[in-house]
Figure 1 (tube, rainbow, N blue to C red):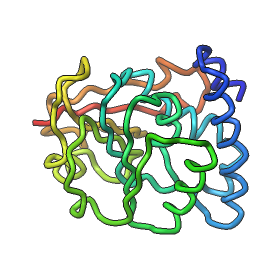
Figure 2: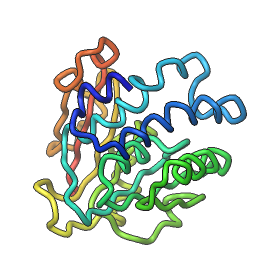
Figure 3: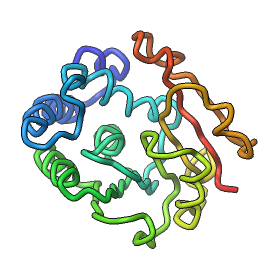
Figure 4: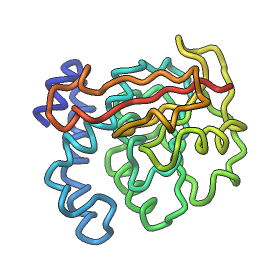
Length: 206
């Protein structure tokens, strides 16, 4: 909890308790259902929770914003963001039911009221959202093609409706043809060595 407290010093006591619960619950669940690499579970706070919260350093979602988390797995980045933005609605979707079981239970035990879940494919999701977030489930262009129909700008935020992804490595070829995309180094926000190769990419809806 030390690193989350360091970068987000204005958390309420309820939010702190929710993050502490996540730090306890994810390892417990991971013994039964592998939602985080077992080699990496000891790095849960920095590599997964804080990594997810990089999105919160890039944009402060306005109250009433609707966010789709595509390919959420065990609830990342959606659940940490839901703790930080209790007035924002998050819809988490994944094709693997057992991973959503983990996410649902963690959300329930953390007392999160601003999260909904959907087991299935993005083609089965017909609602619209201000933003889609994802942790690098596929190339940016392919992801935008899938979620474009679900993005609608409601004018709530400083940024237009679009896709926000957490990625790593060389993105030059991947972002060809997406000239409006903005790439941010997460090392601009966090000084742990893990973030030296990590990036956030924002692509507004064409």
